[in-house]
Length: 117
Image 1 (spheres, rainbow, N blue to C red):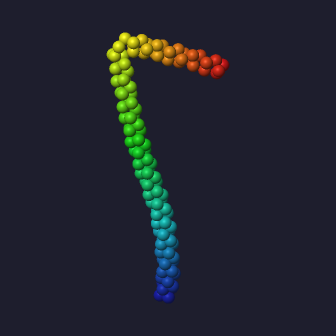
Image 2 (image 1 turned 180 degrees about the vertical axis):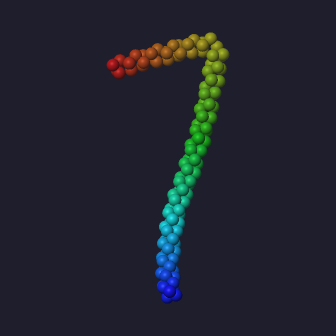
Image 3 (image 1 turned 90 degrees about the vertical axis):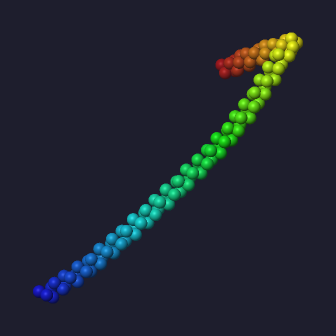
């Protein structure tokens, strides 16, 4: 009976060693899988950061464009106000130009509507 228990103990140690090997290989596989996922997440975080920087640069550029357009429009309004306030001849010219622009607009509208039919 003593020999049988030693034989069973040897079988258990061999089996226990193989369980350790299986667990070790499973742990290595899971560690590699985790490393792959961490690498993907790192890449995704880098892409998000780069996209956020690109969007911020775009918004900064857009802000400067709006500021330049605002400056241009305010300058135009000042010149227009000066022209209107200056004299009667300038007012007459301004009225002719305004009427001419309205006529050109309606003429273009009419032509475009005819072409689309």
